[in-house]
Length: 137
Length: 130
Image (cartoon, rainbow over all chains, first blue to last red):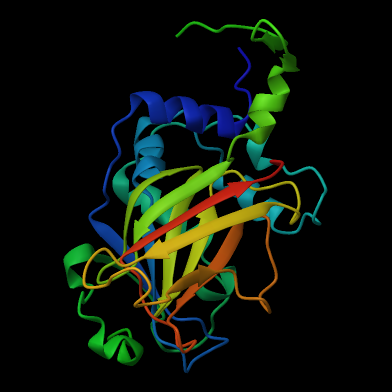
């Protein structure tokens, strides 16, 4: 059976899966812009539902290979064979590799911790000191 | 799930190809709360949003666009404490930030041009998928 296009699978999944609000957020700093505040990656509830369901999302390696595909050239991830169900923790690690630049999670050679996966309640909701946020070492 | 396979749609007068309809639909959209701890309320083809700082967000797509020639529609608003015309908050794509096929960076500013968080933020992207 053909697995079709990723977008078709995502659209179909949205019609039958309840969204899943993750209990995690990913805090990270960009080593290229050390003066900027820490960034917060917020997982999408429909994406999380698809990840936990399985047979919808492509292998993470396809996204990584597609990073080097020039604009307008065919990409691998939309038509790749989907992978099985993930745990919530595996889905977060998948998102880190997909949506955060490798210079943060793979290539950084410094001594500081610049990426942390934390429970959502650990992210301050008060934005008064938003620009002072730094990842605790 | 059953599948209806049709090449054209006819309303009794006019016939259009089904691709006319599918190509015209938004290939990605997202509605999120931009204040406090950012939260995504609903979406299609969005994997995450990154809160990059006050009034600065990155929308990450699950299925990338074929090229950067997509069309972006953005709207943001306060849900309380403001009346029509009293505040001019805007959500837009920063002019000096290049488009990318797998993500879009957006920012919200107030009347003076300073970045600020908006309570309700929405984005819809039309274009060809990779």
